[in-house]
Image (cartoon, rainbow, N blue to C red):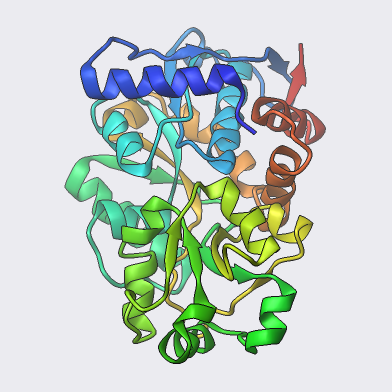
Length: 325
């Protein structure tokens, strides 16, 4: 669920990125926090830091986690979460409008650095994107989280029983033999990204134009796939809490196509060099962001209807990182 305030900010942020309307410092952090295990850091006292994120639940929640942690450390944090799309968020950071964000290793490796083949080992993938992005763009990647929010295709149990599909290889055969039974719903980015549908079709050797596809907003795909009428199959994120809530079945990626998407803290080199304390504050938090933790945080937003800011702050409070003010 996106609050009206966040929707307005997204429009203004997009305006700033596209038309130069001046929102370079973002808005105020929406909730107050105080120190707990995160103590005030002298070198961060009053330092202006703008935190950014993309426009889906997990990214917004991760953005707020950064904001509250750095606020507790004493920084003057500005909120520029909920920017539409990966490329707009990346451009904002390259342009200096964002100081720090959580970005996914697979997105960095495939979409930003232009590689075609992901590395299956998450550590090797992180090290590769870290080294390449630093060399090419002066971007610093640190402290990847253990969670892996990769892509997947999902279906409801009735579709699984009717089609016998269990793996993406099974799905590819269904597309080739009975395309009308393989109606698939995807979001705009997944439909064109090389780590999305076109690349998946190439890996599994089927014509991507055979399967009827509908472009839907991310949040609609889950329910439409659960209903099974509009979407027999749907693109999902593997840490999304709606997978469990709607009893969806994930197709096994039996050829290991989808990259690892471990979120890591990303900063421009000059910012990271000037403020190494940012990474120090965030390291223990990143270490706790497992698949189980992130799925639950996402579930609270997308299933229970809580605000991402509340969910992020409550988790940090529960883990003893900050206190609520």
